[in-house]
Image (tube, rainbow, N blue to C red; front, side, top):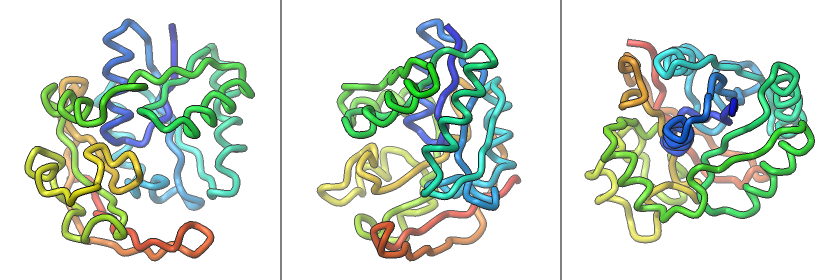
Amino acid sequence: MKALISWSGGKDSCLALWRARAAGMQVPLLVTAMDEDGRKSRSHGVPPELLETQAAMLGARLQRYHTSWGTYEEQFVRVLREAKDAGIDHALFGDIDLQPHRDWEEKVCAAAGLTAHLPLWGGERRALVDEFLAAGFKAIVVCINGQHLPADFCGRQFDSAFLADLPPGVDACGENGEFHTFVYDGPAFSAPVALRRTQLLRYDAPAELGGATYYFQELAPA
């Protein structure tokens, strides 16, 4: 079975990739949504240079597409159809248990003639985090939602100390949008992604996107 994966660069998509390959699936293509000008990935804020290096270290090709939130679905279906034409019949996603997310993923895959697979689906959230860390993956927290966490959580290593410091009610997976990560090393990598932390950026979302304040740890190649 040959599949692409909807790729954020974070821990959940990385663990989904790891599980799928362990089950015998070929995953040669990572698909990542970028902002309109292509300078950062949607939601995670990671620059293309690091995403390209990450994909290379994972032995895959990265396909980036530029989109606004308003055109996100349309552009994603277009990419899925192109992959279908190139001989890929399956698509992987890193969602765990949010049914509306699964419904959307199955919808867009059906529109493109692909079959959706969710390798983490139904897993206990903290158990998945423990599996990720126990396997030896390493990640940095690159985005936090200020409604859930203070700014100083952004840029931290995603590890047991970070998890121990999470306030009550904040999910260990960040599955409710509390935080996002970037994975830079682990058993699936041929070598670590060399990177450095630069500045911490603040983004105040407009009301139509929820109005929350987000903090992004800007990363750059080392």
